[in-house]
Length: 308
Image (tube, rainbow, N blue to C red; front, side, top):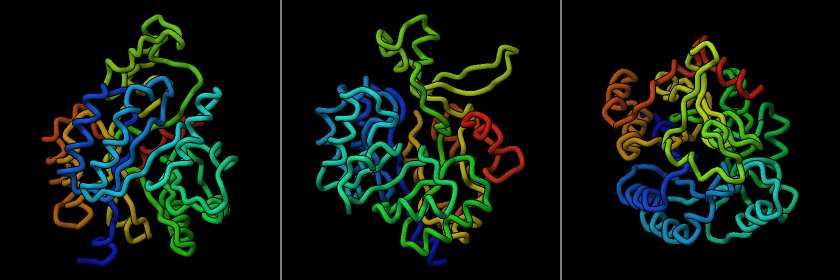
Protein backbone atom coordinates (compact mmCIF):
# COMPACT_ATOMS: atom_id res chain seq x y z
CA UNK A 1 0.00 0.00 0.00
CA UNK A 2 1.18 3.54 -0.78
CA UNK A 3 2.69 5.02 2.44
CA UNK A 4 0.64 8.23 2.20
CA UNK A 5 -2.53 6.17 1.85
CA UNK A 6 -1.66 4.12 4.89
CA UNK A 7 -1.05 7.29 6.91
CA UNK A 8 -4.21 9.16 5.87
CA UNK A 9 -6.05 10.39 8.96
CA UNK A 10 -9.82 9.97 9.19
CA UNK A 11 -11.52 12.63 11.29
CA UNK A 12 -15.09 12.77 12.58
CA UNK A 13 -16.04 16.43 12.81
CA UNK A 14 -18.38 17.96 15.40
CA UNK A 15 -22.11 17.25 15.30
CA UNK A 16 -23.51 20.47 13.86
CA UNK A 17 -27.20 19.67 14.36
CA UNK A 18 -29.44 19.90 17.41
CA UNK A 19 -29.58 16.24 18.37
CA UNK A 20 -31.13 15.22 21.69
CA UNK A 21 -28.62 14.63 24.55
CA UNK A 22 -29.53 10.93 24.69
CA UNK A 23 -28.95 10.64 20.95
CA UNK A 24 -25.56 12.32 21.23
CA UNK A 25 -24.51 10.09 24.14
CA UNK A 26 -25.42 6.95 22.20
CA UNK A 27 -23.73 8.33 19.09
CA UNK A 28 -20.39 9.01 20.79
CA UNK A 29 -20.49 5.68 22.63
CA UNK A 30 -20.89 3.79 19.38
CA UNK A 31 -18.23 5.88 17.65
CA UNK A 32 -15.85 5.17 20.54
CA UNK A 33 -16.40 1.42 20.39
CA UNK A 34 -16.97 0.72 16.70
CA UNK A 35 -15.87 3.50 14.33
CA UNK A 36 -12.56 3.22 12.48
CA UNK A 37 -11.65 6.89 12.86
CA UNK A 38 -8.51 8.43 14.31
CA UNK A 39 -9.91 11.64 15.73
CA UNK A 40 -13.32 12.78 17.01
CA UNK A 41 -14.53 16.34 17.52
CA UNK A 42 -17.01 17.22 20.25
CA UNK A 43 -18.56 20.46 21.47
CA UNK A 44 -21.10 22.98 20.19
CA UNK A 45 -20.13 25.04 17.17
CA UNK A 46 -23.36 26.54 15.84
CA UNK A 47 -25.58 27.89 18.64
CA UNK A 48 -24.73 28.61 22.27
CA UNK A 49 -28.34 28.01 23.31
CA UNK A 50 -27.84 24.29 22.58
CA UNK A 51 -24.66 24.04 24.63
CA UNK A 52 -26.11 23.46 28.14
CA UNK A 53 -28.11 20.39 27.12
CA UNK A 54 -25.03 18.21 26.65
CA UNK A 55 -22.57 20.00 28.95
CA UNK A 56 -22.96 17.56 31.86
CA UNK A 57 -22.54 14.55 29.54
CA UNK A 58 -19.51 15.91 27.69
CA UNK A 59 -16.80 14.70 30.13
CA UNK A 60 -18.19 11.16 29.98
CA UNK A 61 -18.26 11.27 26.18
CA UNK A 62 -14.65 12.49 26.05
CA UNK A 63 -13.51 9.76 28.45
CA UNK A 64 -15.34 7.08 26.48
CA UNK A 65 -13.82 8.24 23.19
CA UNK A 66 -10.31 8.37 24.63
CA UNK A 67 -10.77 4.90 26.11
CA UNK A 68 -11.73 3.77 22.61
CA UNK A 69 -8.38 4.96 21.28
CA UNK A 70 -9.61 8.17 19.65
CA UNK A 71 -7.90 11.53 19.84
CA UNK A 72 -10.51 14.00 21.11
CA UNK A 73 -10.76 17.58 19.86
CA UNK A 74 -13.11 20.03 21.60
CA UNK A 75 -14.49 22.75 19.34
CA UNK A 76 -14.98 26.34 20.41
CA UNK A 77 -18.20 28.12 19.47
CA UNK A 78 -18.27 30.00 16.17
CA UNK A 79 -19.27 33.68 16.10
CA UNK A 80 -19.36 34.39 19.84
CA UNK A 81 -21.02 37.73 20.54
CA UNK A 82 -22.50 37.59 24.05
CA UNK A 83 -20.46 37.62 27.25
CA UNK A 84 -21.45 34.03 28.09
CA UNK A 85 -20.43 32.94 24.59
CA UNK A 86 -17.02 34.55 24.94
CA UNK A 87 -16.68 32.80 28.29
CA UNK A 88 -17.55 29.50 26.63
CA UNK A 89 -14.72 30.02 24.14
CA UNK A 90 -12.32 30.86 26.99
CA UNK A 91 -13.38 27.70 28.84
CA UNK A 92 -12.58 25.54 25.80
CA UNK A 93 -9.18 27.20 25.39
CA UNK A 94 -8.40 26.44 29.03
CA UNK A 95 -9.10 22.71 28.79
CA UNK A 96 -6.29 20.27 29.58
CA UNK A 97 -5.84 16.77 28.23
CA UNK A 98 -7.60 17.38 24.91
CA UNK A 99 -6.90 19.16 21.67
CA UNK A 100 -9.02 22.19 20.75
CA UNK A 101 -10.28 23.64 17.47
CA UNK A 102 -11.13 27.25 16.70
CA UNK A 103 -14.07 28.16 14.45
CA UNK A 104 -13.25 31.84 14.06
CA UNK A 105 -10.38 34.14 15.05
CA UNK A 106 -11.84 35.13 18.43
CA UNK A 107 -9.80 32.61 20.49
CA UNK A 108 -6.48 33.97 19.23
CA UNK A 109 -7.10 37.17 21.15
CA UNK A 110 -7.13 35.36 24.51
CA UNK A 111 -5.07 32.25 23.80
CA UNK A 112 -1.75 31.89 25.58
CA UNK A 113 1.35 31.75 23.41
CA UNK A 114 2.28 28.19 22.58
CA UNK A 115 -1.23 26.76 23.03
CA UNK A 116 -1.78 24.13 20.32
CA UNK A 117 -4.96 24.37 18.30
CA UNK A 118 -6.63 23.08 15.15
CA UNK A 119 -8.38 25.35 12.66
CA UNK A 120 -11.84 24.50 11.30
CA UNK A 121 -12.95 25.03 7.69
CA UNK A 122 -15.10 27.96 8.85
CA UNK A 123 -11.88 30.01 9.11
CA UNK A 124 -10.89 31.47 5.75
CA UNK A 125 -7.43 30.07 5.04
CA UNK A 126 -7.05 30.92 1.37
CA UNK A 127 -3.31 31.54 1.00
CA UNK A 128 0.10 30.48 2.22
CA UNK A 129 0.60 33.65 4.27
CA UNK A 130 -2.48 33.01 6.40
CA UNK A 131 -1.47 29.38 6.84
CA UNK A 132 2.02 30.37 7.94
CA UNK A 133 0.62 32.92 10.42
CA UNK A 134 -1.66 30.33 12.03
CA UNK A 135 1.10 27.72 12.13
CA UNK A 136 3.39 30.21 13.88
CA UNK A 137 0.64 30.79 16.47
CA UNK A 138 0.38 27.06 17.20
CA UNK A 139 -1.94 25.55 14.56
CA UNK A 140 -1.04 21.88 14.09
CA UNK A 141 -3.99 21.13 11.78
CA UNK A 142 -5.85 23.33 9.31
CA UNK A 143 -9.08 22.20 7.64
CA UNK A 144 -9.36 24.13 4.40
CA UNK A 145 -12.47 26.12 3.41
CA UNK A 146 -14.98 24.22 1.34
CA UNK A 147 -14.90 26.29 -1.83
CA UNK A 148 -11.18 26.12 -2.65
CA UNK A 149 -10.29 24.83 -6.13
CA UNK A 150 -7.76 22.04 -6.46
CA UNK A 151 -4.90 24.35 -7.41
CA UNK A 152 -5.27 26.23 -4.11
CA UNK A 153 -5.55 22.98 -2.13
CA UNK A 154 -2.35 21.76 -3.79
CA UNK A 155 -0.42 24.95 -2.91
CA UNK A 156 -1.65 25.00 0.69
CA UNK A 157 -0.94 21.29 1.17
CA UNK A 158 2.63 21.81 -0.03
CA UNK A 159 3.06 24.74 2.36
CA UNK A 160 1.47 22.77 5.20
CA UNK A 161 3.91 19.93 4.67
CA UNK A 162 6.80 22.42 4.70
CA UNK A 163 5.54 23.93 7.97
CA UNK A 164 4.70 20.60 9.59
CA UNK A 165 0.99 21.50 9.74
CA UNK A 166 -1.62 18.90 8.81
CA UNK A 167 -3.89 19.89 5.92
CA UNK A 168 -7.41 18.53 6.10
CA UNK A 169 -10.38 18.65 3.74
CA UNK A 170 -14.12 18.09 4.20
CA UNK A 171 -14.81 14.65 2.74
CA UNK A 172 -18.42 13.90 3.73
CA UNK A 173 -21.57 15.68 4.82
CA UNK A 174 -23.51 18.82 4.07
CA UNK A 175 -21.21 21.78 3.62
CA UNK A 176 -21.51 24.25 6.51
CA UNK A 177 -21.31 27.48 4.54
CA UNK A 178 -22.00 30.35 6.94
CA UNK A 179 -23.03 31.32 10.47
CA UNK A 180 -25.42 34.25 10.96
CA UNK A 181 -26.67 36.35 13.85
CA UNK A 182 -30.23 35.45 12.81
CA UNK A 183 -31.98 32.14 13.33
CA UNK A 184 -33.59 31.03 10.09
CA UNK A 185 -35.14 27.98 11.69
CA UNK A 186 -37.02 30.09 14.22
CA UNK A 187 -38.20 32.50 11.53
CA UNK A 188 -39.59 29.68 9.38
CA UNK A 189 -41.79 28.67 12.33
CA UNK A 190 -42.87 32.24 13.09
CA UNK A 191 -40.67 32.47 16.20
CA UNK A 192 -38.02 34.90 17.39
CA UNK A 193 -34.44 33.77 17.98
CA UNK A 194 -34.70 34.37 21.74
CA UNK A 195 -37.86 32.24 21.98
CA UNK A 196 -37.02 29.66 19.31
CA UNK A 197 -38.33 26.65 21.27
CA UNK A 198 -35.35 24.80 19.76
CA UNK A 199 -37.33 23.95 16.63
CA UNK A 200 -34.06 23.13 14.83
CA UNK A 201 -34.18 19.83 16.74
CA UNK A 202 -37.00 18.70 14.46
CA UNK A 203 -34.59 18.43 11.52
CA UNK A 204 -31.64 16.17 12.41
CA UNK A 205 -30.02 16.75 8.99
CA UNK A 206 -31.08 20.40 8.65
CA UNK A 207 -34.13 21.91 6.94
CA UNK A 208 -34.12 22.10 3.14
CA UNK A 209 -35.19 25.39 1.59
CA UNK A 210 -36.21 26.31 -1.96
CA UNK A 211 -36.01 29.53 -3.94
CA UNK A 212 -39.13 31.65 -4.46
CA UNK A 213 -39.46 29.87 -7.80
CA UNK A 214 -39.62 26.49 -6.06
CA UNK A 215 -36.14 25.32 -7.03
CA UNK A 216 -34.02 23.31 -4.60
CA UNK A 217 -31.43 25.64 -3.10
CA UNK A 218 -29.82 25.26 0.34
CA UNK A 219 -30.45 23.88 3.82
CA UNK A 220 -30.61 25.67 7.18
CA UNK A 221 -29.58 24.52 10.63
CA UNK A 222 -30.59 27.14 13.17
CA UNK A 223 -28.32 30.14 12.46
CA UNK A 224 -26.28 28.13 9.96
CA UNK A 225 -26.57 27.94 6.18
CA UNK A 226 -25.58 24.63 4.58
CA UNK A 227 -25.44 23.03 1.15
CA UNK A 228 -28.52 21.15 -0.03
CA UNK A 229 -26.52 18.13 -1.19
CA UNK A 230 -24.25 15.91 0.83
CA UNK A 231 -20.65 16.06 -0.37
CA UNK A 232 -18.80 12.75 -0.63
CA UNK A 233 -15.19 13.07 -1.76
CA UNK A 234 -14.77 9.67 -3.38
CA UNK A 235 -13.46 10.25 -6.91
CA UNK A 236 -10.75 12.66 -5.77
CA UNK A 237 -9.03 10.70 -2.97
CA UNK A 238 -5.90 9.70 -4.91
CA UNK A 239 -5.44 13.16 -6.35
CA UNK A 240 -5.79 14.84 -2.97
CA UNK A 241 -3.44 12.41 -1.23
CA UNK A 242 -0.84 12.89 -3.97
CA UNK A 243 -1.20 16.66 -3.49
CA UNK A 244 -0.27 16.32 0.19
CA UNK A 245 -3.66 16.32 1.92
CA UNK A 246 -3.26 14.01 4.91
CA UNK A 247 -6.59 14.22 6.78
CA UNK A 248 -10.18 13.75 5.64
CA UNK A 249 -13.13 15.03 7.71
CA UNK A 250 -16.51 13.35 7.92
CA UNK A 251 -19.28 15.66 9.13
CA UNK A 252 -21.92 13.65 11.05
CA UNK A 253 -25.30 13.25 9.39
CA UNK A 254 -28.36 11.33 10.57
CA UNK A 255 -27.20 7.99 9.16
CA UNK A 256 -24.93 5.12 10.16
CA UNK A 257 -21.66 7.01 10.64
CA UNK A 258 -19.80 3.86 11.69
CA UNK A 259 -20.58 2.34 8.29
CA UNK A 260 -19.81 5.66 6.60
CA UNK A 261 -16.38 5.76 8.25
CA UNK A 262 -15.72 2.20 7.06
CA UNK A 263 -16.53 3.22 3.48
CA UNK A 264 -14.10 6.12 3.58
CA UNK A 265 -11.40 4.08 5.29
CA UNK A 266 -11.64 1.53 2.49
CA UNK A 267 -11.72 4.21 -0.17
CA UNK A 268 -8.67 6.01 1.23
CA UNK A 269 -6.82 2.69 1.34
CA UNK A 270 -7.71 2.13 -2.32
CA UNK A 271 -9.43 -1.18 -1.61
CA UNK A 272 -12.75 -0.11 -3.17
CA UNK A 273 -13.65 2.00 -6.18
CA UNK A 274 -15.61 5.28 -6.06
CA UNK A 275 -18.59 3.46 -7.55
CA UNK A 276 -18.55 0.77 -4.88
CA UNK A 277 -18.12 3.41 -2.19
CA UNK A 278 -21.21 5.28 -3.43
CA UNK A 279 -23.19 2.04 -3.42
CA UNK A 280 -22.16 1.35 0.17
CA UNK A 281 -23.04 4.89 1.26
CA UNK A 282 -26.54 4.30 -0.12
CA UNK A 283 -26.91 1.50 2.43
CA UNK A 284 -26.06 3.66 5.47
CA UNK A 285 -29.52 5.22 5.77
CA UNK A 286 -28.35 8.53 4.33
CA UNK A 287 -31.42 10.42 3.13
CA UNK A 288 -29.56 13.24 1.37
CA UNK A 289 -28.62 13.36 -2.30
CA UNK A 290 -24.91 13.11 -3.01
CA UNK A 291 -23.47 16.13 -4.79
CA UNK A 292 -21.18 16.05 -7.83
CA UNK A 293 -17.47 15.26 -7.48
CA UNK A 294 -15.67 17.96 -5.50
CA UNK A 295 -13.42 19.09 -8.32
CA UNK A 296 -15.97 18.89 -11.11
CA UNK A 297 -17.00 21.96 -13.05
CA UNK A 298 -20.32 22.26 -11.21
CA UNK A 299 -18.90 22.40 -7.68
CA UNK A 300 -18.11 24.46 -5.65
CA UNK A 301 -20.24 27.12 -7.38
CA UNK A 302 -23.05 26.75 -4.77
CA UNK A 303 -20.61 26.92 -1.87
CA UNK A 304 -18.89 29.98 -3.27
CA UNK A 305 -22.12 31.91 -3.87
CA UNK A 306 -23.47 31.07 -0.41
CA UNK A 307 -20.31 32.21 1.39
CA UNK A 308 -19.91 35.39 -0.66
